[in-house]
Length: 100
Image (tube, one colour):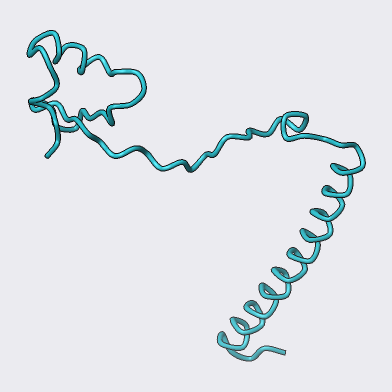
């Protein structure tokens, strides 16, 4: 029986470690079962409602910045933000907005 706070803390830590191990074992079992079911039913990510595009795709580096509002940037690819269209209308080109 625990006689000190340190003994109780030690028991709590040991139980938390045991819980983590049990959860990891169960998780491995579940994953194996899910993989088996996916293969047996020939399921796709779309069937499961999962996105197939990368979620952590790095943001493109900014190539242009609005001199008046430097937090407004654009990489130069994709759809032009409204500030870029306004800037071009006002200045004729993006040369002055180019990040050096």
